[in-house]
Image (tube, rainbow, N blue to C red; front, side, top):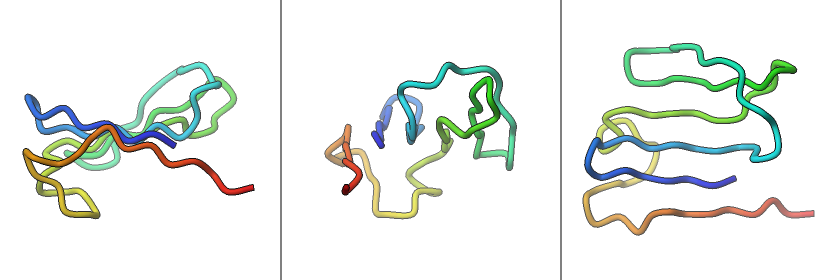
Length: 72
């Protein structure tokens, strides 16, 4: 999983799978979109107005990108 934050547009992207090819997006709320692969699996989540909607403290000084590795 990789999380990136674009300060200029206050948007965060949570990439869950880098190997799958993007097919479509679905708007969940005004500020959250889900990206899907061709096989229907979720590949990422876009969070708009991220400084307000993030699940963890996020501000203009946040250290991003953040990368998490799955534990075996």
